[in-house]
Length: 265
Image 1 (cartoon, rainbow, N blue to C red):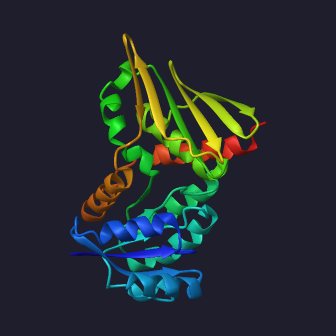
Image 2 (cartoon, one colour; image 1 turned 180 degrees about the vertical axis):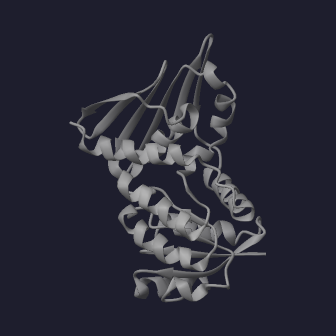
């Protein structure tokens, strides 16, 4: 059975709890072997409540685990330092969304992994939605799409609708326009001859949704598929094969765009 470690800055978060529960469900040939946190006191409490061993330094697990998941979903600024420590375990690395706060940090993370000779990837769970699969099969016939989502704040949650669009159209964004109404954002992205628009509703629990069009067909779908179960499946396949399932060019473009959105007037 595959042995996995978590590294987080603060383990008491929705992602850590969800991934722990999935690995403990018995559905996967993998288990959570040990965890570490930058907040040791809170991390020990979380580990004890979860009945998972805790280590102060993730590097102490070298030779014990097969893969590592770096979380800190609300603190991407912590990811460079966390990756630098994690690669010392010499195992594949998954980095939770949002991958990095800036394009420079994103490039640094990939460079750290490459110097260590290790595969590494990151994604929003929304990329793994079943509702996107038939739309990808449209290929170049997919002409236009809108992605909708809410969340606590723009900087942290815009990645979800953006990841959906980039996963459909690719990284070739030539131009974008941002419109703000209060805290709501509407961002239109030009993908060559095709167009994607994202709608982000901070401080609102707007359901994630995708609307897509090709000649003669319009699809309007709420995202109701088990995106975190799908993501865990993809993560474990990555850990088994070492093949990065998300194109790095797309990941870098997503972070570049989020950084640009943040400063767009």
